[in-house]
Image (cartoon, rainbow, N blue to C red):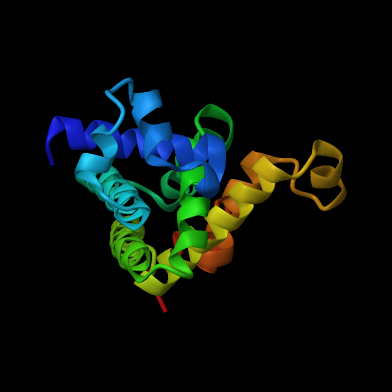
Length: 206
């Protein structure tokens, strides 16, 4: 991917996050990327191709991030280390920079009606699940791609709730503690991974 295409795709992701699917137009991307009007349309002639390009770019970024995480994970990583990763990821996705979570939600909605977007998101989901399961197994957890895929689905749903609901509603339904939520997501998808429980130390034994 050329630098100009990367710029336009990254900008499309940003527009999706701030303006929603309806706000994603060629002109909106041109203006935010500060390129001459018509540039985005030259690269991506239709809105369909622009959406697919944004989905492909997000997939590329997510796969690269998961690969970096996998490659930098120490061999002696523990179940507790892995569990603690999810509150940090949730905080980053919701409080630090929600751009990708919001853009992903818009792309998921578009994917219901657009097979090209669906295909790009499916590659990201599979790659994330496989890498997540591998990370869990490195920590001695009997995780499968299904477990990791379920965890990703839980994560996205909770992140959207934290971004969309007001604080009083979050407190009312018990979603006002992002740290506990991150740990809870992990233990819900990988039940034997609750930090401090005896079955964590016993993981890998029958």
